[in-house]
Length: 334
Image 1 (tube, one colour):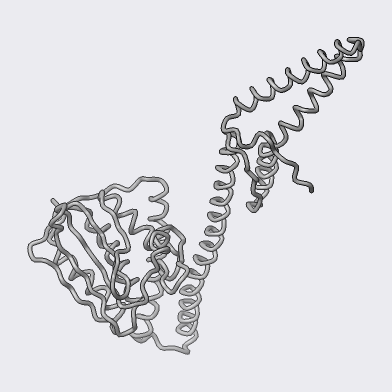
Image 2 (cartoon, one colour):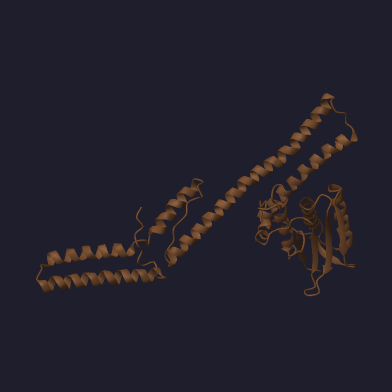
């Protein structure tokens, strides 16, 4: 297809383009009528010719003004059928060009959401299938008498049900995140015992990892204990998974001298997160492009952590670190 020039594209406004079209059309018509009168041609011939030439010049000048609209119509029909690959070419600087560029960005965002949705369904299916298959095989062996119901066997079954419970809890949190129906049960509690309890739970799941606590004494926070426990537990689990098997995960807590807020930091000894990926790991369904993923499974862990921190009017970020990954949580202190 030949790409014809679009002479009015540099003009920044659709109103200005229409004004130029009307002006040029009237000028062409007037010039041809004047020429016909001066040369003695009959008006019955001059006027239709002037109208025809005016329309021809208008078509040449207006080429491309409505092309993005036609392309957007075709792309919208394709998107309704599930095809998010169509893009709209926008070369003009006017309102139609801005609309075309916004439409292209929207199409790209929808394509990314659709890709993440497909990955999420695949990840959840895998996460559900693995513990269910393990439980089925274990219970089948016990029922057939192949395996005795010893405590260690039952503990294996309990671990698989815990895994299922965590996944279902994440899905419920995702539903609350979408509906905005979460309510905080704020209470004041000491930070150090809170961290020690969460670290003790994390150590059970990762016995080879060393957890170090560096918390300033006397710190108190006012917040939803369960939600903050969910945040810290997720950060500890991520740090343990993405650090060395026998590495150290450090939890620090202090009160910022600059703004008086509580600062929690979890640092591992893993490969870290590249700067260009640091914002993306907090997006739902994100698995990360490198060796660090948001939770190694559904891609919901850090997205839910950010949601819980935002509920406390705080913020969470990946901070600079000389080694490994350092995730920092800042929430208001009482």
